[in-house]
Length: 386
Image 1: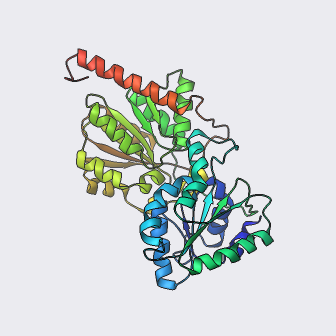
Image 2: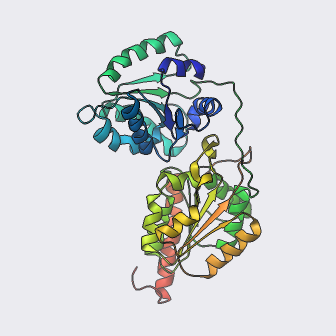
């Protein structure tokens, strides 16, 4: 179905969401038609953020908004759906458009498998009637379902359209770019050179895929790295947990701007705990590049000031490899929580692969490596527990 027809049938003039590759046609259409426009389209930090923003739109206008997201975002909306939108509370109507990653019997990456299995069940449990849109869905069928949903929305309830892969199409050509010069994969290469055999936690998306391939290219093992293939926004908290319980080892977190924005409260937690052995590197290209390149607000904010306000003893921004190398070496040799914001360009290799090990194998190898470090440090007298 053409996305223009899909949008026309939904009939809303306000969209907010977190981009998803399954919804690229919709995202590109909204960007080409509206860009980021506070009256019609806003890309928010996380899916719960979207729900609250859309609720405010309804309160101000009385109209029904649309929230779009990948199905992984359902977890982020459960609280506001249950305690804000629900008809037993404020009865705020909303249309959800959800990309169905990990649909049963459709091949996908491991982080999407279970989420795909429970996508429709979660909607049912939240009391949200849903309709699955596939390639075979026609305009007449969708119009009929929307007419049925209109009566539900009139009662202050929510509805959802779950979008299968390839169900929506758009012929427009939207180009996303920025003026930064450092490529993300090359930034990771520089980090790997300096970090050596230190434990590293990498964020969701292409960054972890690039880190995996760099290790392969260098003939290194993957035991040094925990690849956070799912749970976007939580890599820094995982790294904090590692750093606090392995205080004698330098721990590196390779993060992205979209992930940082999604759960920015994690930065306050890091700043409050101030582990002396954690280096938090945020590669900021101002975009949700892994799912298509739609913009984040990180290109308009001072992340260094945010980090300092959260309690990071040191936070710097770098825009060249010379600056990056200098700050990486300083972080490696020094003590104290550090944030390095690395401004990077958009784009990735067309032949970029995916990890060839399973998520469980990655976890087990990483844990074995950390455990070996605990035993070694204990034998050296630097730790008093095992």
